[in-house]
Image 1: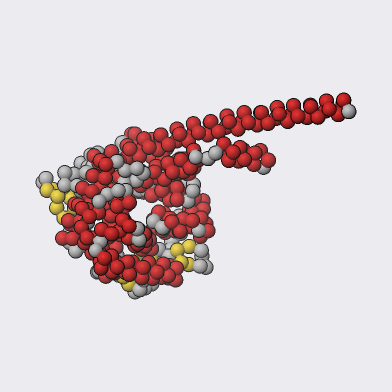
Image 2: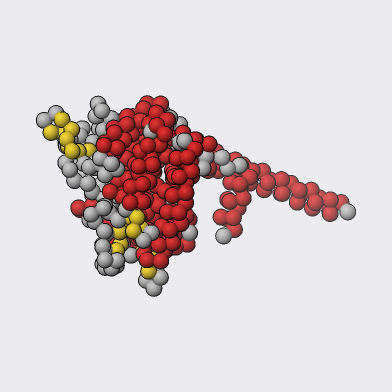
Length: 400
């Protein structure tokens, strides 16, 4: 009995020692993880602030956002890229100053958008005056990113009753997209019957953004009649757009998307995955605009294929595409691929320390800021894990 008691005492002491060691290791691991993710948060916040500052430095006195005015003197305003830059200003926890900067741009864009009846052109600073260039490129895309910007502004706390009283610009945009509607997809413009996948992904994203926003109490800045009219159009177009994209642009045999249809409805030839734009990028572009395209198996498979072909996170892309694809880092975040997004940001920051000359432009800074905001959410989720969750994961790692 005496020996048995000693053995039990020994077992208890050993168990206590093991438990104590496990507790010590878990606490140490937990503290290290907390420090790691807090450091990561500070880094992405710092980079996001830097990108937003640079966008603001490229903003003119009337609210316009230039492609890259500060570093090479180019006085070009491309409203499509400017909208993406302004969306970057609104990413994360937008400050009052950033909301004001986005508001100023929205007011500038809205004025020209209404004047040009939804077909806003590119502008250039000539002799101290900002003049239209007359060219209207990808009307459907230009409309889509502006409508999404309006929604982002409202979601960030901006006052849409001031930015777009009674939704005049928003409704014009929806009607313009309906005008471009051709068999469930939008054409590039009234005079160009080409229907591109990437344009239509942006359009579907905008339609979904608007529907989701109008579904909330915040959507009440529209009059009741106008709100009802918009919702009916949005629901119909979203349904038709999704069905048509699946029916006409998904190639089930080759497990990839077609890049578009010409004005006669013929499919554009897919060159290869080695052709970055538009062939390869089009396969994963939807993840930047539609949550469900990032979360399903098809999206993950296409993203996996893209990564087997391109070492994009190290910015090893064709020379002519340099600084052209910060959107890929945002897609990586949406795909829950924080490692590649982090690698890209490291490479991007190293490159921009040397210079910020064109072809780097403000839309790239906007996507980078949005990537930072997405990663911050990932890190905050990790910070909020309990010590028990950390311990369980650590034990699983040891067993495997």
